[in-house]
Amino acid sequence: MADLFIARDHQLGLAAARRLAWQWAEQAENEFDMECTYEEGNDTDEVAFTRSGVNGSLRVTATRFELSARL
Image (cartoon, rainbow, N blue to C red; front, side, top):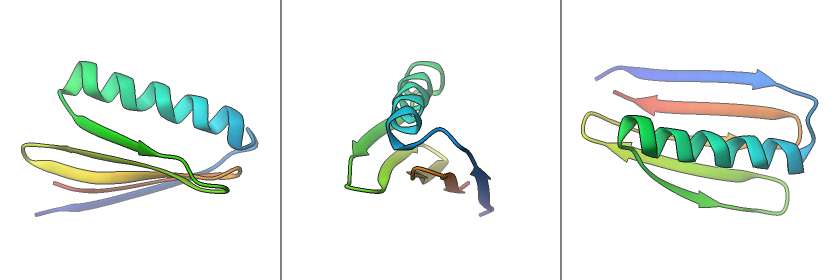
């Protein structure tokens, strides 16, 4: 198994980052047959994703995206 971690700072604010994360989740479901669940929090959202051979999460804050995956 391989682990993957990608972190990117941004200046979008939480509302815009949240919209982008929703779009990413929809694209992952449509293009890669992922099963995604989205949980909104007060200052951090999390998209959990899974499919055969991969699972992980995308954390979304007002200033940062963090993607963790296990292949």
